[in-house]
Image 1 (cartoon, rainbow, N blue to C red):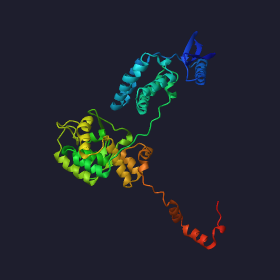
Image 2: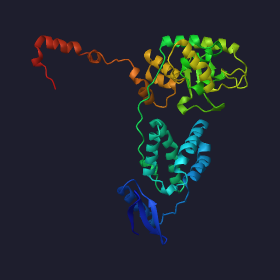
Image 3: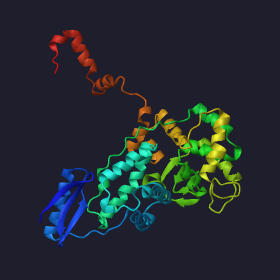
Image 4: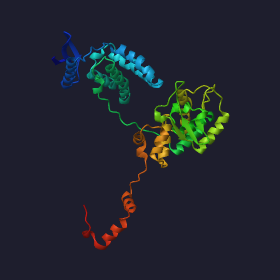
Length: 371
């Protein structure tokens, strides 16, 4: 069995015959990758493992993938973001294109177009996440032989600037929040919980005896869901001051069916966006503090832990990061410099510093051997 690689209309194709029919299949981004794909196809034909691929266009397959895979596998928040990306961006671009005809260069052109439209590199990379997942399943399910998205280069993302409040700014901010929301914002600052984790806290999560707060769930669009990751299920240390505020808040809090710490005026879950718009940002303005994100209260908490010399593993556990590398990447630059005097301390630890110094004093450098 033989075949050939052909360049047509700026794209590379594998051309071969099987079952008496000539086939044209999109290759890789260049001749070499297309030749490798052709060799794989011919080997499959020769050893009898070749199978005809199921044809589908992008729109039909993407919606099939959402229904068959994504709806049962993904968290509600992730699913919503994927649906928005697919329906608002990917489908309008790829629309009725056959999966078999979508190449790496087509996807790279999509990336370039979105960047030229003004989307941030990070946003465009977020578009590639469900796209890569879809094509991966297209290979597994027999719609494609290769995943063209694996060859796509992601846009370079500049490191996001992190903002946080100083201790003085925290005092100013808390001094300006409305009284009924004081416990909520103090908990945010003193625990570093994500917004959804904070709004999903129940009184059963507050362990006054041990001084911990258990993070077990999150709130998204009025629905309870699991936290961001396995490591996000954690226990956060509760300061004595925060414990005192929460004890007082418990006697004043409105009873509600979910036994939540924080609810709106009628006892229902708090809408996160409304909280930011009506309470968080106005309190910042009243305090004379620059506009920051609610999430920056989480950064403020981590910064406080680092500045007071807490062990980085402890910081990781409190933040619920799955990897200590994540903690170091975000907050490592805040760690105090402890390198100064490291050489002297090494001498003192081993106990030879004074001996060598005395040898130099008695005999000079000429009698010392250096490597």
